[in-house]
Length: 254
Image (cartoon, rainbow, N blue to C red):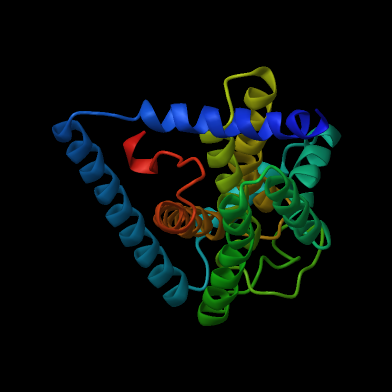
């Protein structure tokens, strides 16, 4: 009796995922149209990031970056300042390690082993790519004589590591929750929380004076491309190595 009780939540999750996958049937022309839109979006994101990277590498600073930071920092509200600090908090150590580890353990406990492994990859890959690009571009962070820097960091600025981590890791968690859980209040709250973190972290990095707006924009572009690659690899591996588990629908078919 205890064994069947402990397996019930896992079975519910698997059943919900299977139903979600079955509902993703569309006519071939519509699938081709959505696939084309997805490919066009990828091309535009790659082109935009390449152009922005070239501009950042060849131009020391953009006047609009300073204007955006000064405008945000002119908001004299303790509540807003506290909110910006809280939003950035999960991206700093040690919580940037603790939170992914806990997420991986929880997902693995539910029997979703491939999802657990991919969650770990989603936490690590954006950071690895971010460090590589930062070392390539070597853009200095905002100086304290230009803006108010809440905490001085010794790494490079472009692209924002926080934003890439949030888009890759929290974005993958958002995808799993959206595709594997039934419609419910907890599901809605989790999606809202993760979505808010992803959308607002860029604002917080600018407000705290640790990144320029162009750093944030570059991170959203590169982070989005990284997440798209993670999702495609997730589906590729799911169909080949974890066929007995539920398969979430592909991103470009939603």
